[in-house]
Image (tube, rainbow, N blue to C red; front, side, top):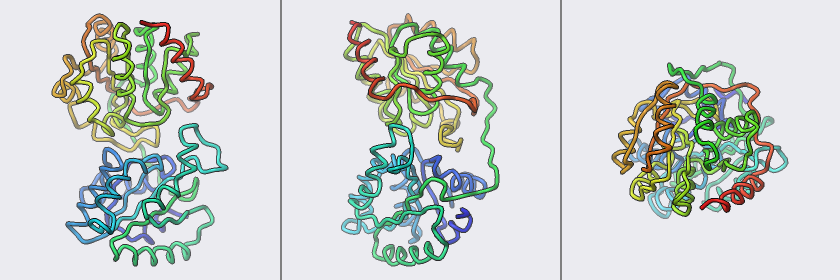
Length: 374
């Protein structure tokens, strides 16, 4: 279905969400039509944030908002749906548009498999009426569904449209770019050079894929790296858990701007604990690049200042390889919790591969290596 007809049938005036590659047609339409517009479209930090923002929109306007997300975001909306939106509480209507990654029978990445299996069940358990949109869904069928949903919204209930792969299309190209010079894969190559045999925890998406390929190109073992293939926003907390229990071993975390924003409270916990052996690197391109390139707000904020306010003893921003290499070298010898933001361009190789080991194999190899360290 063409996304313009899809949006017309839905009839909403306000969208908020976290981008998803399965919803790329919708995301590109919203960016092309509205950009980031306070009245019509806001990309939020996480899906629970979106649900609360949608609630505020309804309270102010009386209208029904739309929240879009990948199905991995369902976990983030459980609390605001159950304790804020639900008709037994404030009865705030909302339409959720959910990209169905890991749909049973459709090949996908390991972090999406179980989430895909429980996608519809989780929505139904939250008392959210659900309809699955596929390539064969007719406009008349969607019109009928939205007529029923409108009745539910009038009762203060929520509903969802679960979008199968390829169900929506949009022909207008949208380009996402910035003015930063450094390329993320080259940044990761520099990091790998300085970390040596130190353990690295890398965030979900392309950074982990690029780290895996960097190790392969260097002829290095993959045992040094924990590739966080899911759980967006939690890599730094995983790294903290390791650092606190391996106090004599330097631990590196390679993070992304979208991930940091999603669960920024983890920075406060890191700052409060101040592990001297942890180096937190955030590669910031101001974009949700792994799922298409839509912008984050990270390009507009001062991440090192936030880190310092959270209690990191040292925090800095690097905009070129000379300063990055200098900071990586100093971080190795500092013995203090360190934060390094690295600005980079949007983009990756078209032939970028994926890890050839399973998530379980990655965990087992990484744990075996950690067991050899003090």
